[in-house]
Length: 192
Image (cartoon, rainbow, N blue to C red; front, side, top):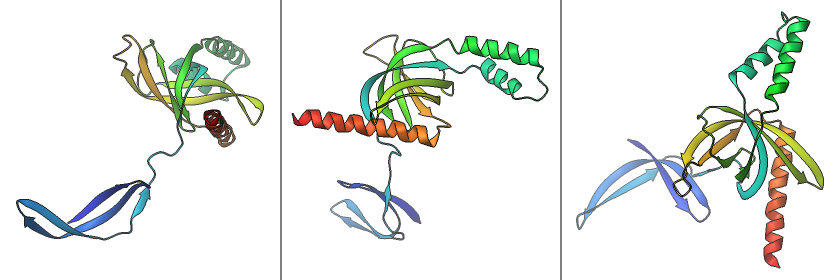
């Protein structure tokens, strides 16, 4: 029988396949001898470095209505009057932003707390301002709510985990650049 073994070390997590050669009993302790049937493979636990920080953002939930209007706008059967009507409604929806502070940030997602109730799977648009490489940036990032957790030490407040989706490569690189500049700035401040 083939087993998947995980090895934890100072240098990370490794994985290999193995088969049982034999079992030995020594003072009521069973010792299993195995032979690795594949090379040790380093397992990357996280795709992006995550920085704990408090940073103000704006966000809004992308509604089904908004998705429908955007689809109708891209339809060839839409009249000029309908296009105008849809754009006006989308403009109204684009004014409904909430303000919160995120708890952490990575190139793949973020977390924030709010008293608003949303569902896992809800689509979200996050607007974030920051300075990277000495240049002011504003990103509008699409995401999806992965999970929510009620905070026991803060009744009525819910922590949401967001995964970024459909993120432009250049924008993601700018965000990652900001994250590493922030980390470097913190380390430099700790030295003094």
